Image 1 (cartoon, one colour):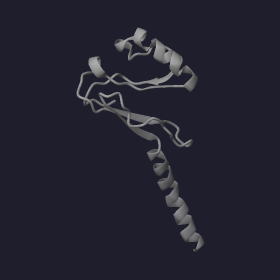
Image 2: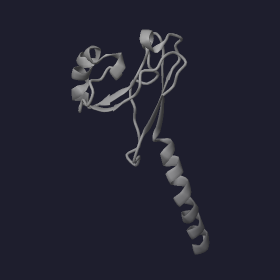
Image 3: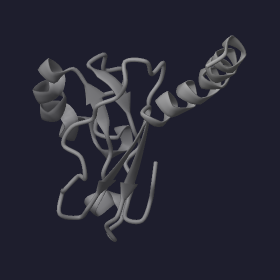
Image 4: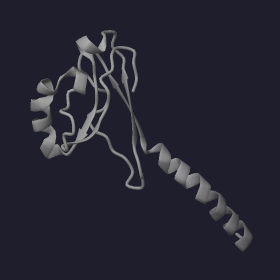
Length: 115
């Protein structure tokens, strides 16, 4: 392979590989009325500077009856956040306002909704 060919490959790879890496930075999760989530674990590339998580509620019930949301926390904070969720209530997406244990919180969505 000539130097020119090698440089062209490296040039185009600089555009292609970041785009491929970005695909690993988007996670799609589906939730059902049976309290089943399509993923029990999320893994993303260490090269991701940000991560997008798309949550879809494939159920049919409204958010007030069988809504789903997604809360990201450290493993050691999970039990505390869960215990406090009902006190926080639906209007706060089941997380107390300004709770530092929650890294990210989605809105509660009903059947057929995405967020």
